[in-house]
Amino acid sequence: MDKIAKDVGDIQSRLIDHRPVIQGEIRFFVREFEEKRGFRENRLLENLNKMVMETNEQVVPKCSETMHEHLCEALTRLEAANHMAQRIQQRELEAQQSTRLQTCADRRKADWEEFMKEQARLKVQVDEEHAKAVGRLSTQYSEMKKDLAKFSTF
Image (cartoon, rainbow, N blue to C red; front, side, top):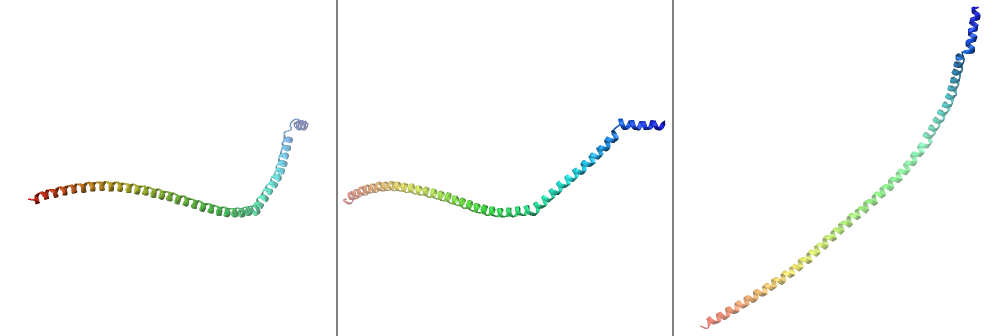
């Protein structure tokens, strides 16, 4: 009887309690999923590794070479542009200095003309004063002559 009760308990537990069976199925599914997933990830990693190697072997050297060519060309153009900018800057500086020199020359010319006008005015003034002085001296000498003539008759 003991054995029958035990068998009945085993049958009942198998019929009602599905946990061990479900756990086994779950383990099987997880193992299967991990294996398939592992293969798929392995293939993806292999493909990525292949792409990286192709890139390193073919694309990177080609890009480096192209970049070097274009950088040399860009450097040459940049140097030419820099040289042209320096020439333009030099011309502007020369033009400014030329303009400044011209302005200074015009100012000196105007100052010289002003000086010459002032000298002409002063000359006229000195000539007038000289003429007045000559006139006064002439008058003074003629008066002295008259006075001398008065005294020499005595």
